[in-house]
Length: 99
Image 1 (cartoon, one colour):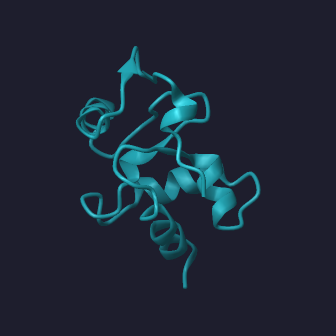
Image 2 (cartoon, rainbow, N blue to C red; image 1 turned 180 degrees about the horizontal axis):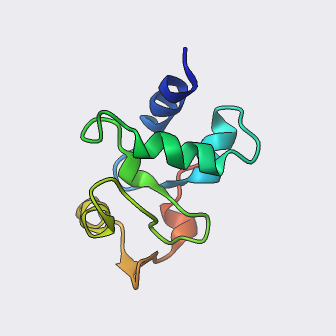
């Protein structure tokens, strides 16, 4: 199984209404300090409607980038019940999914 496939498969565990970080997702697939690699893999996600890459955010609670733009990512997260103010998730620890 390729690294991308392992990452996308692991990301499918993050339920609607929760988020994970680039770093936590990296660790969950066995990559130490693999945040940038995860970002690159998310950017190349061939199935953004199926593999929920919008649920991957920065470790400080900021939503980060998205292939369709940050505004779309923000709208998707809000639709799932995530509260965001000034581009940052409110009560981030509560909204975070732990593998």
